[in-house]
Image 1 (spheres, rainbow, N blue to C red):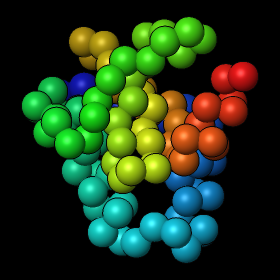
Image 2: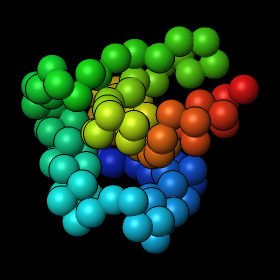
Image 3: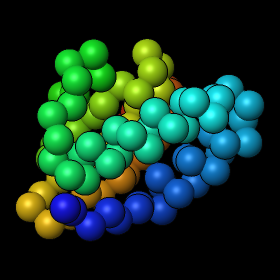
Image 4: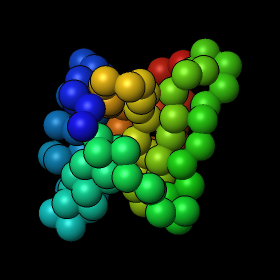
Length: 96
C-alpha cells in the first residue's frame, strides 16, 4: 500500500470543489474509491480513461472521475502523489 501525499494545489482544488456545489457526495465517494484503488495498486476500470500526461506534466497521469472532472497524480513504488483536481480548463491552465 502506497503512502498518499497531497500537493498544495490538490488541497486547494478539493476545497474549491467541495464548496462549488457542482459535485455531490456520491462524486466525492467515487473520488475516494479511485484514490484507494490507486493506493492499493488495484486495476482501474477502463471507463476512467487513465492515461499518462506529456510535456511539462511528463511523469504524471490523469484519471477522469467524471467526464470533466480530472484527477492528476503521480505514482511510484512507495507513494501516491495527488497533484491536482478539477475541470480540464482548471487543471491544464496551471501548466501553460
